Image (cartoon, rainbow, N blue to C red; front, side, top):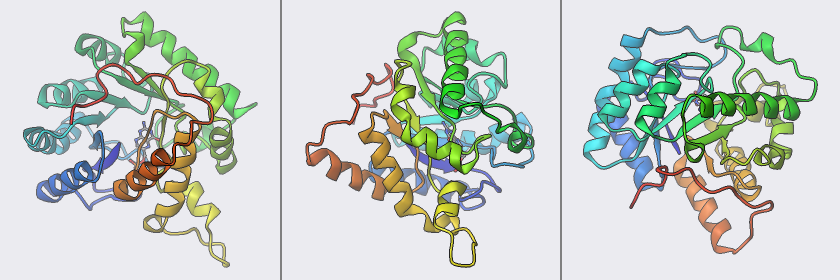
Amino acid sequence: MGVLNVTPDSFSDGGRYADLDAAVRHGLRMYRDGARLVDVGGESTRPGADRVDAETETARVLPVIRELAAHGVPMSIDTYRARVAAAALDAGVTVVNDVSGGLADPDMAKVVADAGCPWVLMHWRGHAKQMRDLANYTDVVTDVKTELDQRIADALAAGVAADRIVIDPGLGFAKRPADNWQLTARLPELLELGYPVLFAASRKSYLGALLAGPDGSPRPTDERAEATIATSVLAVAAGAWGVRVHDVRGTADALAVWQASGRPRLVGSVPAPVGSEPTR
Ligand code: PMM
């Protein structure tokens, strides 16, 4: 999954693809580089970010989605608003990527159930402004697993088919660096829920902290590509269904090497959700 943020303020690529042509070019490049989905987002979820209204979010994403759909690019919509998801599905996306796991908008489950599309349920505890205060866990992996299990139960109760659900630990969302590393190391425990897992570490601040310079300053976001590739390969080897990354080419290359080497998954994977694999 390649990240296409059509926002002025996302933490690593904010402003870069706010212009339609630049966004479409980048989406096409990621598709050519091996992205099976281009994940289009119109609202930044970085810690502390301001919300935008639904009209602004929709106006940002729809022209890009229409243009990429015309080129046959498979896409997901990165939103927690049902209205935005519905408009994006009408315009050609086939997957809903909801960082709130269905919590932010009570209408989202119905939109997804009616569309019959795959739904990424990410572990989430609150909006960007509050998330720093919500990183309190007894045992982060157990707590995330329990909370994701509840999100899955709610989705099923709302009529979403089990084979359309993908889960995501939500790295960096109400998580301290040590929490992200625990979720990385113990990814197989999340697989025990029986759903495909999306792993989205790309360029996140805990990688910047890991690679801090001698003065303690974090590695800049656009210099975290190699660390991202390493985490992504480890996650897929541990059984993740997919990875969400900014630098598609390097990740696709690394995964091609991993696959060609015939290495088995460390744990064994869960089948992909129905409808998530585009024909190419
Ligand atoms: N992270 C971001 C945005 N969308 N979606 C999922 N499923 N999982 C994530 O961890 C996730 C996401 C924030 O990163 P960005 O600003 O680079 O898009």
